[in-house]
Each structure stands twice: as structure tokens, then as C-alpha cells.
Length: 186
Image (tube, rainbow, N blue to C red; front, side, top):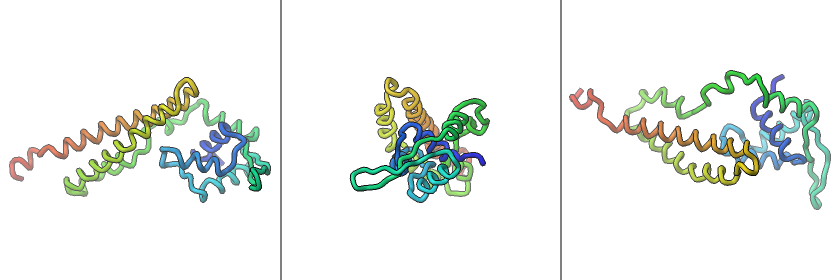
């Protein structure tokens, strides 16, 4: 059975932070700017258990003060799976257009009055602009000198947001311009 993107990302996080607890992985997922990866206890704890049962992770009991916990690390099978995910051949789906719920919703905006579409676009712009300082901070928090690949991942998010802002500004300007049909009174 193939591993999901979230399972693969969790293997990567365990690789980076081992030994670590499921709570630590949950916290890292919750801090992610990617809404696609849920940091909920209801998704991370069962996922970690599944990965352990399938032989990708190993755990051992540990203590932190009075608290008991389980520390996770990758097994050989988990390391092989992570390396396989990170190397060629890259599936075509992984380099296709990224999932963008704004773009998907834009496909169907003709179902709404132009004023509603404009409100949708302006709301998206406001939210993206509010996220901009956080994305810039992520780039500063991950300087190239410390880990160039974390830096480039943060830059990717920043550049994608920049492109989305430019696109939404273009759409807003087009909506705000009166169409020829409306100017002629039709």
C-alpha cells in the first residue's frame, strides 16, 4: 500500500527530529503554513501508530520527569521509503499544477453576481496579504546558511503567495472595469 503525502511528510519530520514524540510531530504539523497537513490529534496519533504497525517507525518508552512518552525514530524500512519518495522518478502529478482551492472556485464564479465575485476576490487578497509577513518570517527563520532546503521551501511558499496576489489583483481589476456590454446599457 502506497504511503499518503501526509505519511511521507511525517516520515521526513521524524527523520529530522528523531527521537521525537507524536506530540512533537503534531505540533510541527499544526505550525505548518500548509492547511493540507492537519496537526489534529485525531489524525497524527493514529497515523504514527499505523506507520509503526506497518514497520516504518519504531518507538520506545521514555520519561520526561514524571510523564511517560514514546520516542519515535525511523526503521530501515522507513528510511528506504523516505529516500524513495525524495528521489527520481518524480511522478508527473507531483509537478503538475498545485492544488489551489481559489483557482478551483474561480472556475465557477459566473454562477454569482459580479459584486459577489469581487467580494470573494477581495477577501482572498486580504487574507493572502495578511499571511505575507508570516511567510517572510519563515524565510528569515530558515536562512540558507542553516538549512538551504528549508530555506527554499519557505521561499516557495512566499513566491507562490506573491503569484496568487498578482493573479487576484488582475482578476479584481477586470471585475471592477465595466464591460462593454454593461456600458452600452445591455
